[in-house]
Image (cartoon, rainbow, N blue to C red):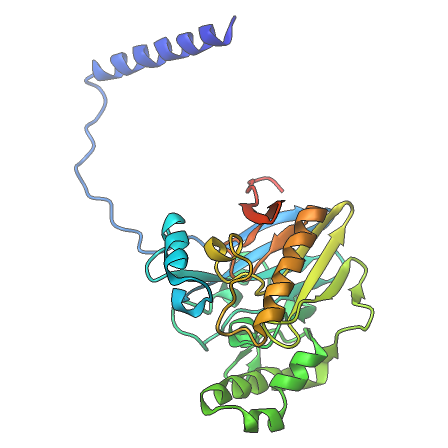
Length: 323
C-alpha cells in the first residue's frame, strides 16, 4: 500500500472513531473542574553521552545581564537581541556541567549558591534530582573565580562537595585569592575578592594547580582562554571519537556574540584578550566539530559552532530521551 493509502486509511479510521464516540451516550461527561496551576518548573538537568563518558548539564538559574554591559553599537545590540526574542531586560542562564568518565566524577563550576539572589543557586539541588550526590564529586574544575562559578561550593562556611579536589588556574588563584591585590582593588570590587576567599577556604587543603601539560587525567585537559579573567580556563573532555569543550564564559549572550564576537562584556578583565579567546574557541570548535558547553549559553548550554567565512552561528545540541 502506498504512503498516501496508509494516510487515508488512518484518517478514515480516526474520523469513524470520532463519529462513533460522538454518538455514544455511555461516555460520562467530565466535570467542569478547573485544572490548578502547577506553579513550578521541571528539574533543571539534561543528560547525554560523550563517547563512553556521561555528561549532565545542570541549571543553576538565570540572571539579568543588561545590554548596556556589552561593547558595540547600541542600536545594533538592541536589534540583534530583539531578533532573537530575548526577554526584556535580557536574562542569561547560569549552567554547570558534571562529567562522569567511569573513573571519576568531575563538576565544572558550581553555580552561585546563595550569593546572587533567589533566581539562582540550584546546582546542588538539581544534581541530587539528577541522581548525583554532591559527596560523589571527585573534582571540581573551576573555569574562573567569579561568584556565579564558585558560589555553590560552600554553604554557611562548610563545603558542599566534601570529597572534591579543586582545580583552578594559578593566574586566577594568585589574583583573586591575594590579600594584597584585594587591598588595592576599588571598593566596589572588594566583595568579589572576599567571596572567592571564603568559598575556597574550606577546600584549602585540597586545592590543586592545573598541570603544566594541561592534562588532568586521561581524556580530561585544561585549555587556557584568558581575557574574561586573567586565568579564565576551558576544559576539554575526549572519549572515543567525541570531544566536548566546556568553555566557561566565552559567551555571555548568544544572540550578540556569535554574530559579533568582537563585542566584549564590561566585566572582562582584558577586553582585547577576551575577544581573541572567543574567536580562538569558536574557530577550534568549528574546525574540530566539538560539542561546546557554555555557562551562559541557553540551557542546557550544549551545542555546536558553525563558521562561514568570518561569520559564526550557534546550533543547539539535539536532545534525545535515549542515552
